[in-house]
Structure formats: structure tokens, C-alpha cells
Image 1 (tube, helix red, strand yellow):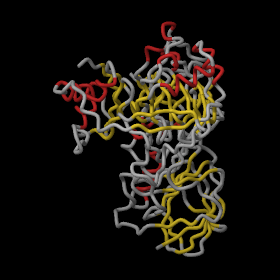
Image 2: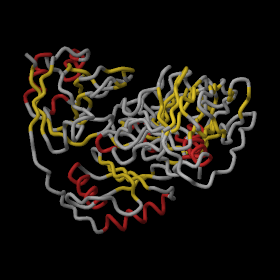
Image 3: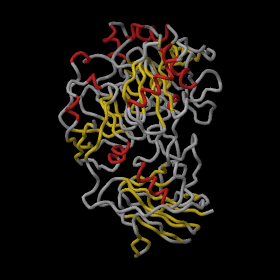
Length: 213
Length: 288
């Protein structure tokens, strides 16, 4: 497995790999596989993202020491990603009235109606969670919808806003700053701290957006 | 059980402890005290958990006043040196003070620094959220900001050998030279060395991030117009958006970011930054 170890301060290293399945394999190497998964000694946190995995240590260490420990762990890594934990499709009704619909239409060369059909046409896969509680990066949707983030992030994006950035779509769990292009809004609560688990969307699941009636 | 009642909270007073590490995978950031060193010094003084399990009050600038509804309680103030008064009596900074039922304590405004920590022996035992009493201002997790009339339960003190007194800060304030180490995306920036100079702290800075004002940094020409896949970030990460003005992440940072991280402050430098006020000038210095 090809990995690149990038420095990330006194207590962390960022591991860069080729794709999402390599991310899963690295996570499995660091925390183990199955229900009994716990991080290897000295590691407090393993955070997967698109093509990187952050490893955070309890104690500050030099990059050289972090590198040696990780290389030893990853040398024995099984490159096959662990099996997904079960699939489910969550239907998410959206009112497509977002402030960036016209911009997305312009950037993609589609009409606004085509943007909506593209967003609802294919299901999106939950790749990983991050950013804020309950936020999930959704991928594998219609590739025509790949648009850049806004040059200047908005100071406040409303809760339930549905947006696009690069290859991803996502749902803002609550009002936060954000730089994604906003297509519309949904009332589906993606985060509820009284629910177990609190995040609605889990990696490996699918999201089917649909036009709200 | 002992109780405190907030009379006035000042500009912003939040409960903070060592935070909730380990939940970044579901988007929950660590949060916790912004100046960890000052918070842990306070915990040590009053004999609280040295691992950050007991909540203190993080007070921006000062201005908090409270009454002891049921005492006795032992408190100590660390971080920004807010003058502390019990009625007409001035109480010492960085030392343990015992208060009785009915005592009213008020904090004046700190002459230097930004965040003051009021530690109480036994900790403030408001209901925890995901294993911590830290208020995460980005996610809205943890106990609400203090308000007039907020009642704060105090846990039973644990017998530990008390910590040594904390020296008050030098009148000149905190060191303003912040050590920064190489970050994962240094190669996205044309002249990384240009981060190593003086920057003004913007007024739109908070526990999520501190925005720096100065000569914008340029992205490497080969990266302009490209999108970085979202990747995990840490407290102290110096992120450079296309505008070229760096944002340094604080304790309530989003768990992932989409802009390149040029450098990462050391833990000590992140603590220092938590004490810098808007309008202050800081110098970033690359650590070899």
C-alpha cells in the first residue's frame, strides 16, 4: 500500500493514500477490525477523511519518532478494505430554492431544472463524517455536479442547507459558517444528540435526495 | 453539595474542561479550555483532576460576578489576571481562596491577556455532553454559556496535594512570538517562509479560529484553482484559504477542512494565541 506521511504538528501525522478504500485499510491497520476496534498504543484518535487519515498521539513527539512508529504499524497492514457494516438508503426531501442554484447551473452548463434532476437522479454514498457533528461527506453522485467551493465562505449557512463542493454533496446539521454552493434546504435532522448514534448518516450508507412536495 | 449562582456573566463565560477527544469521526471536535496550560494550572491549584476531567469557568476579559449559594468552596484564578474582589477585599491571583455561603465575588477586567480561568475544587458538575462539560461554540454541544441566574453545582473535592501558586503574568503581557511547525500542505504555498512574520489579530476571531491580517500569502501557481479533498485538521493548524490570509484553528475548530494547512502551532503557542486580543500583533516563527 502506497502511503505518504505528512507532518501535522507536535502530536499528529497525516497519512495520505490513493483513495477511499485505502483509507479504510489504513484505519483498520491502526485501530483493528471488527467491533473490538481500539487504537494502537499511544494513539488517541484516528480520523479518516477523503484520501487522508489523521493520527493523533497522547504525547508530543518529533516527526521522526511518529514516522517510525507508523511505518512499523503500516508495514503489516492488510491492503484490503474491511467489509462495509451494512447498507441502508436514507431518503432526503429537499426544497430546491438555494441561493447558489443559478451559480451551479452556470458552472456546470446545465439548466436549473437539470441541476435538480442530476442531484436527485443518482444516490449519493456516505463517504465519511467530519466538519461538524452530523455532517457527512456524500460522494458518487452525478459527476456533472462537480463545482468549486465559493471563493469567500458565508459566515452563516442555515441548518438543513444542502450544498455541493468538489465531488461532494452535504447537509449542514446546524447554522455554521460554510463555503459550499447551496442548492436548497431539508428538514431531515442529520444530528440529534438524544439519538443513538446521534449522527443519522453512517459511512457506507446511501442518501437519495428527492424534490420535497 | 455546594452551589454558585451567576450574578452577571461578563462578555462571555463558558464551562470548559479537557474536552472530548476521540469523536472527530462523527464530526465532534475536542473543544476544551482554549489556554490549556492556564486551565490545568488552576486545576492543580485547587486539587482537581490533572487530566482535565473537572470543569472550570473560562471567562473572556473578566466581568463575571457570582454568589456562593452554599459553601464552603475553594477557588483559584489563572490565565488572564482579572482582579478578583470579595466585597471590598482584593483576593490574590493564582492562589487558592476559600469562600463561604453568601460570599459575592466579582472579577474586574484583565489588564493583559484574554481568557481567565476560575477553577473550583471539585469542579463545576453541570450535566456533561458526550463525556465532557466543555461548551463547543461551533457545534452547540455542552452546557450553555453562563447567564445571570445560572446555578452551578460544585462537585465534592477530592483530597490531592495542592499545586504550587501560579506567578502573575509579567506586566508586559504574554510572549507574542508563536512557534509554528511544518504542516501537511506546505507545498501549496509559494513562499512558506513568508508566514514567519508579524500579523495583526482580526476582530473576527473566536474559539473556532483566529484570523490574521497582513500581507496575503500566495498559493503556488500550480495549485491555484485546484480543490484539496477535505482532510482532518487539528488545533493550531494554520490554514491558508485562497484569499491568502491565514486562519489559525482554535479548540472548537471544524474536524475537517478544505483549505491547505501550511503550518501547525506548537501546543504552547496555541495556549499563547488564546490570550491574544483582537488588534494585537503576533509574530509567527518557524521552528526548526
